[in-house]
Length: 234
Image (cartoon, rainbow, N blue to C red):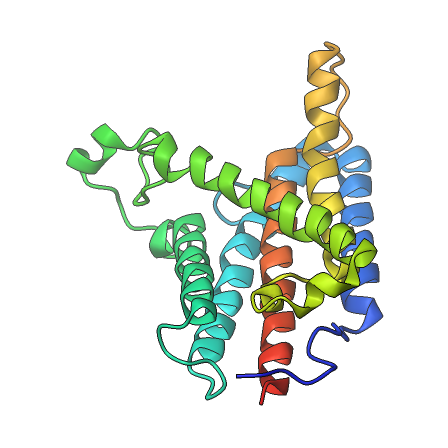
C-alpha cells in the first residue's frame, strides 16, 4: 500500500482547524466571566444537560462513526497497523460518548439501582465514576497523546520533513491540529497555575469540562484528517 504525494497534506478548511477552536474558547471564556454563575451552570456547565456535557457525548459519537468508516475503507487492510490504531480511536470515542451521557441516563432520567449507587460515587449508570482507572488515567493518556501527537510530533516533522516518508507517518497530523491542542492544554493549565498561586480567580468556569470539549474536537478533527488521507492511498 503506497501513498500519493499529497497524502500528508491536511487540507482542512481554515474555519474548522483555526477559527472554530478560537471562537469556542472565546465564547466559553466570556460567558464564564460575564454570565451570572447560576445561569452559566444551568445552561452551559450543567453536569447532565448542559451544553458542554452534551457536546462531550455528541462529538465523540460522530468521531466513532468516522472511525468505523475509516476501518471499513477499502484502502485500510483489516488487522493492519492503521486498522488497529483507528480501532483504538473508535473504542475510545464510543466509551467517551456513552460515559458522558451515562449511557442515556442524563437524557432519559432513569434511576440508578441501589447496588450500582454503592460503587458509583455520583450515583449514575456509568463506569468512570467507579474508579480512576476508568476516568482520570484514560484522560491523562489522551492528554499526553494530544500533546505528543498534536504539538510535539508535528513540530518535529516540520523541522525534519523526511520523517513524512516513514510508513507509520500517516497517523501523525500536520500543524493544523496545533490550535486545538494548545487551547485544550491552556484551559486547564491556567487553572492549575492559578490554583498553585492560591489565586481564586479562574479564566474558565469548570475548566476540566472546557478542556474535554477540545479533547473531543481534537479527536474529531484528527479522524477527519485520517479519512482524507486514507482516501488518497492507492
